[in-house]
Figure 1 (cartoon, rainbow, N blue to C red):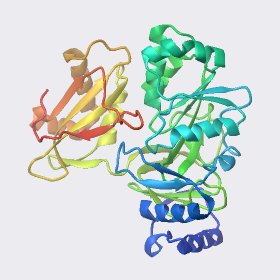
Figure 2: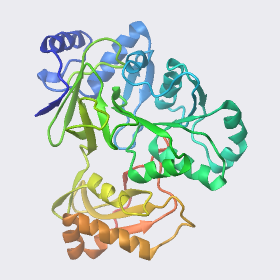
Figure 3: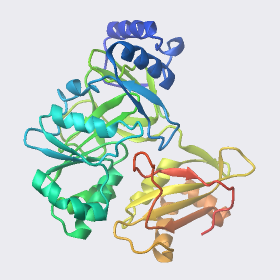
Figure 4: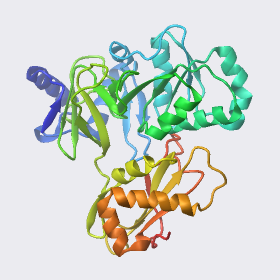
Length: 394
C-alpha cells in the first residue's frame, strides 16, 4: 500500500467517530463507498441544506450525493484560484439533470471575483449567433470537459471567429494530447488549469499552467492510499463539499516523483479500476487500448464498442475501436487510416496482437465523424456494450 499525503492519526480517529454518528463510517474499519457518503451528506444537509447531484454515469452507475451549500469552494480557492478579478468565464459545462459541474464553475468564478456566462455547450450555429455577445462581454476564459472544450475549439477555428481566450479550466475526463492540441490551436498562448475528483467528493487534486501534462496535486488535509488496482481517499477538517474516510474511488493512480511546478503530492490518474475484461482467456485493460489509439497521430478521440461473448458473462467476444479526427469529413469507412490505427494498436498492445492473430475479426477499427456522448454531460463515453452479441467485423 502506497500513500500520497499524510493525515494525523488522531484526526483520522476523530473524523471516523464523527462520521459514525452520521451513519457513514467505513464498514468494519475498512472502506466506505457511495452509500456511506450519501447517508452522511443527507444527514448534514438536514441541518445546513445542500445541493443534490448525481454522477454522470459515463463509466459507472449513477450515484447521488448532497453537496455542501458552498460546494467547498472557499476552502478550494485557498489552494487553487484559476480565475481573478477582470476575468470573464464562458462556462461550457452542461446545466441541469443533477450534474453539478455547471453550477460549481459559476460559483467558482464569482468566488474568484470573476464574471461568468453560464452558457453550456455551444454548437457551430450557436457560436455564430452568440459571438457578438461573447465579444461584448469580454470573454477571456473557458471552463468545460476536455471533449467539449476540444469541440468548441474546433468550431472556433472552422468559423474563423476570434476570442481572446487566455485561460482554460478543465475537469471531468482526461485532457488527452489531441484535446490539448485542439485547444492550443484555437487559443494560442492560453494557460490551462485542471482538477480531478469525483461526484461524491468533488475536487480532490488540482493542476496549474506550470504542471506537467497529466499530473495533479493532492489538496491539503487529505490522504490517498493506493495499490495497483484501487485508491482510497480520506480527508479531515472543515469546509469540504463532502466528507470522505477511506472512500474507495473509481480510478487507479500512481505517485509522481516531481512536477515542474515544484508542488508536493503530485500524481497521475492511470484509468478506471473496473476496466479489465477477459478477452479470449486474456485479461485486457480497456483504458490501455484507448490511450494507445488516442496517441496515434491524426486521431482526435476514440471510444470502444464492446461485443459480448455469448458464452461467458462479462467477457469480450470482440471490440470495435471507433475513432475521429478533429477535421473529419463525412462519416464512413476510411480503410487506410483505420488500418494504420489498427496496426499501431496491435503493435503496442501485445495481448491484443496475439488475440487478433488467432481471431482476426475480433478486433475492428472504424473511423467516424461522431462518437457517442453522454446526454447529461456531453462527455465522450469511453466504452459501451453492443446490445446484440454479434461478431465484430472489420
